[in-house]
Length: 314
Image (cartoon, rainbow, N blue to C red; front, side, top):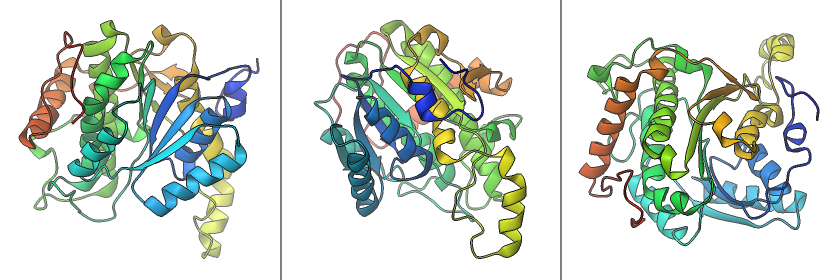
């Protein structure tokens, strides 16, 4: 097998692998690395459930994937991670599925302060709280699987906040808002959540990990600016295309030895060191508790203990 690295494609990762019989849910799978992840796993035999906010784009992504892999088993259900009601409805739609892999890929970087329908700052509301609630509600289906996986698409941006400051978490409208700092805070939460999920449910067969997909430049960036086009051309040797960006996610979804994934952080299809804060057990525990209290406050979540075998999705 070809040695995997920064320029590996999803085809490189999946060489000789058969994922028939696995069901994978992917958030934000209508474009970019989310779509590339979906079509790659579908091509390897997995049943893929597209979970996207925009119905038209989600249905179009499913059609494009079906055209690439006519024999694949695909489904699409709307999912807006900025709405607890939408998350609850999505889980009700898939309640009869045994989910082998949940890939929390969706993310965003608002240019100004925005809020979710429940009043959370949008970046962390979607990237962390939305995915936290989704994972909690899908735990029953995940724990039914033989080797369940939860994969958090984090980022090297998780290194920006040295600490997760719970006094400013989530950010409020009155706080100074810097989009990239808000994004870094959200991506740190992704790494912390994966580690805590592994500690709490690893003994029940669930494997959780987080990853950095790599620096990407999409083909539409800078198309109307000669200067930006030149800049992007100069830096392009240092960036990945969407398929290469999906390779690490696909690696974590398809790697045969889950012990080599559990609680680790990946980049370029291999484990790398994340920050000290990302591995801080006390911070991870507190983040879980804050997130869980938010969910219970919506009267949606009940506490899942490591001893529970049965729970309801809705």
